[in-house]
Image (tube, rainbow, N blue to C red; front, side):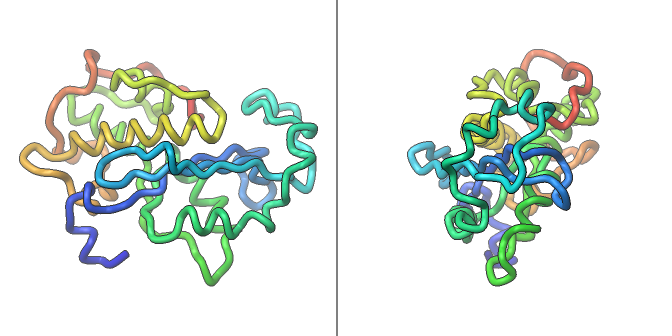
Length: 223
């Protein structure tokens, strides 16, 4: 993606909205268990082009992570290891801007596992930060970690299969479009504005939902 494209309307760009389920939050010691990507093109979610896969880890998931995503060792035994699926993941991300909720997780894991010849894009949009920026601009007091479920509720959007990569990717894509659509009062926001959005920057229009503030922090989880 060219630097010039960052100055164009976000609707002219293509985004890879990604969710991972992992054995934990540390890319140095934890593993990816599932990957899902749904594209956004022309300002629309394209669920028919969803890319989703389970991954066989080197070590079975611990009970703590199973309680979150429900993926047991038995569910993953017949799946391919991550190394065999990097081409699929790289193809899903190629030429697209990455979007994720609490994107620190996806950025950390993907940048670590993707090969050097196909590095992760430097352009990453975090719907958690977008959501905090909108809540702040509306006069609300944003929680430090607004969950994906909280933002979907405020926007009047459905939540699809929480803590499943495909469901969270679809929910994140819908939340992303709703937030991006509010980002500028007089015109479509640019990609650069989406990347830079933070609480306190008054670039927004319209009211988010019916409440002035979101519920209290729920941690960085998707749902």
